Image (cartoon, rainbow, N blue to C red; front, side):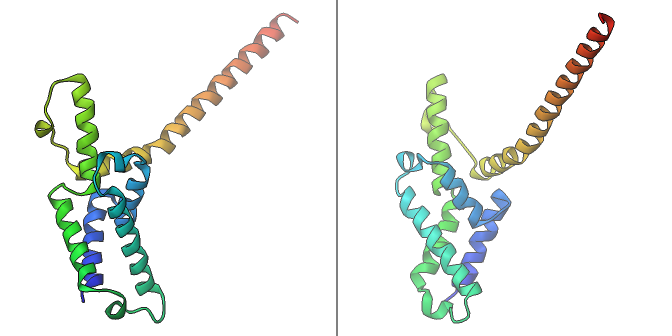
Amino acid sequence: MGFMRAYKHLDNLCRDMNGIGITGYIEDMEKRTNGSIHVFNWKQDYQQLIHYHDLRNQIAHEDYADEDTMCSDEDVEWLDNFYQRILKQSDPLALYYKATESLLNDSSTTKSNSQVKVSPQYTHKQLHASNKKLPILLFILITVFFITVTITFLIMNLFFSIFK
């Protein structure tokens, strides 16, 4: 059959893009709640990825799950096709980024859609890099807040001790 081979192949490509794998790709799609507005077959691709993710987990973790009985050649073909779509930047997230980027560009410049080039690999990595920076930013903001409060408290104590 080759289901697990095709799944691992796609998972590795997704991992190269987002550092997570197919799970990360699915999460990226879930974050784009308006994806079906911009991309034809968004929901179908999302549902297929969920289905294959669940199927892979069953095969990997359940005692009597077997890819020979649970998977078809069409499943392998779909996974291989999706892999190629990512390489050709015609997968749902790449199309979403192209559509939303062109909307942004149309509002600020007169570029045509054919001039907009967006690499899904870059945008996936950029998305996850910005998610990793959020805890650091929150830590810095909280630290600055507490330093400010402490300094204010010290100044008030000094002020009140002078005028006692």
